[in-house]
Length: 419
Image 1 (tube, rainbow, N blue to C red):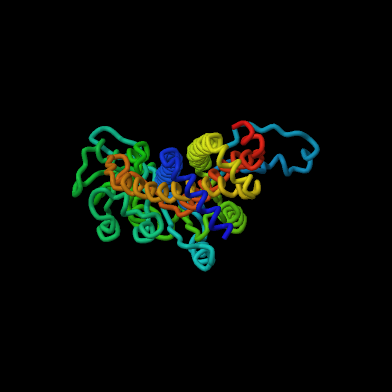
Image 2: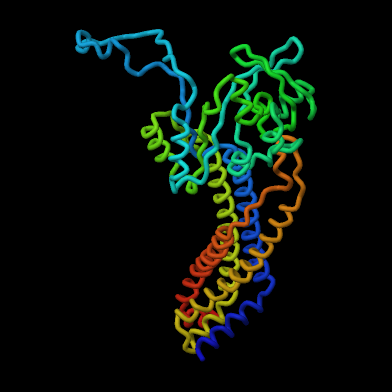
């Protein structure tokens, strides 16, 4: 009975000043709406930018790097072991870029339960011949179907069909920037020269656009077989092994493991893109900071409204306490008022936040530099809605707690005597 009475009194106080109550609820609604929309949009933007990198980047890349020997003959000579040796102008070791015994390595990697897939690659430095001008370029020889399965290759092919790279011998998919420089169209034949001076003609079957112009001006794609032929190498020549994992967080440790096990260079995606990940982290932190600030501002609005309500309802509070209501009862009344505002405003905020996010998600966003993006990116992560709901309740609880504590300490005798 007492709970029912306290609820009835809370509703009466809410309705007695319904305009102020509505303003407080609108403040919470606006805060939650903008919190949801801001985080959804910024998280979607981060996912889009991460996708531009991660979609085209292996979690672990195995390769050989030509570099000077870490141990020189003078370092292992007995007569010089007790001395300090200073060596300059060290020349790189006479090694090939090929990964030796790559067949056995690939076979072992495919048996590893942590590995999602393997995509071998042959990298060839070339010159695109345009009349008397030679343009620097790189041709990546890939296994087309694996490249598409692991790295969404077809999403970045903006002209032609990516599978033609496999079906048509001596074919090439040119980077969009390189194609524009050479004025090449699909069906044209372009001539490239390797660093060894070998020339070969390749048929253009498509255009590739990663969204990064400097890459698109240089990089093109061919099949592994075509790249091996271009370099004059056998069909077991591989320069890179691209690895995609089920759990990307294992990449740093596994890269060190593979480098030691297979005696090759290995780099993980976190190391290769450390600066990019830092930018994503900063953007996410700023988004949360702005969103939480909006909710805190809404909480201060509720605090001010309840403070004014308590000041104007001093007589009613005095009468309640004089008729037997305790300070805890008064405390519960005003906290329930604050929580009612928080719950009502929070529910509306979640609904409007989802609606505004869905509206933004439908706005066209077409740009030549980002061919895979068609609308503004939105992330509908349930975590944002849960954080918004919990934070709205916590904020409004404390916004009601402090004024209610003040009201619970009012001495009814002092108030009635003053009247």
